[in-house]
Image (cartoon, rainbow over the protein chains, first blue to last red):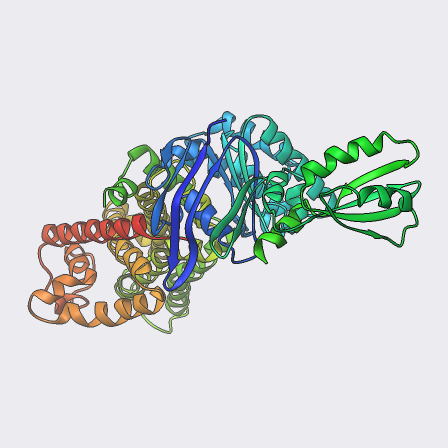
Length: 307
Length: 265
């Protein structure tokens, strides 16, 4: 699938501080997580993508067009910033209608669209309370709503779950997944790995201004060959299984766990190991009940890449 | 450079959209507090004058009090201070509140956005000044104004127009100040009550670099009591008007170019 967001050798310095260093990235339709700890360069990248700051070097294209000095492109891009700032004196509906008016949409059409996106993010379109009196979660929803106003093809969401309660988080995650499935390109910046993991396996990992890796998190994990894969197994007879496992060439170690039916193995080649494990699984005497990779989650991959 | 020009370009429709948006914001309750307080100042002074007049403490015509209030409170204070508040805050306040980003990611150029915001803010400032002027005049002139409505209506209209023109020139200047300086309020106060107070009275070309010198020319046609601005020795109204409009355009163009190139993280 062709990339809708193209980042080429992008660098941004703030005086002597490096915000982003020679970052290259391609993002295709669907949800992509932009991950990294605070200060990794996520917000710098998103701000360059939204044209609010300029790169020191390199180029960015969204939907095949340059971003800076190209305001018409923002009919096709929605952006939810990280900060929870809103126009405190305006109601959510007035705020959205103001944003629509700036985009040239007024009157009944503006009212209809504002009501539609407010419902989409779970806010009452009739709510007249000024946003200054909103909870953090409600502000977050209003911010998300303004990003959706023009039904954009590309959504750039900077820490969109900040301040939301658990129910709100889950609802928003579901929405983001749905937006991605509908063909939109959704780039979600976050420093909370498990939240991103709930949305997508497509990630770009940033650290100290550099793109460490991007792609499917499982494929990235497989590429980290110097770290053994760790897999937990649960079976009827772990001692018998252990004796069979150590015969496999790719198994580097086996250890028993506190669970009397559990054991953990380390393998240098996950693909080969799982191939042979399938054969063992057919043996009813071993009674393998559960196979759980322990370190191909985002957290492990990220830690392996950073340390 | 091409990108900066592209960002600075003006599109009339987009300017109008931004102006409408800023106009609406200007009438929000929290943004109205300061203009209301400042606008009530001449009204309060007028009330005191009226009270003194009615109680016979002083014998003075309402029109004389109005002239004094216009010459001092409006022309030396409000017409400078209101544009200072609005102009320096036009971008800085939204950048500080982090709401500017919502405007920067809309389909309108930065040039259109700034000029539109300026126009919306200027019209609101101008109207706030005119409302304060009319309220003050209505209190002080009362029956006198009704006895010769044509004359006073004309004078008030001209005064109002002068205030609106003055707020245009000051507003553009302070919008530029707001984009050049990190602490624009301090620089604005220096310009408003230092530079603008002293320089118009100096001989030579330097007085052309003030708004008040040119504003005095527009007001010189019998709108104010003799002596109030006579020390300024203003140019003809046409010259004064040309300088004010030209200065506003130059200041605003400078502000647009700065705004179009700047990062707003």
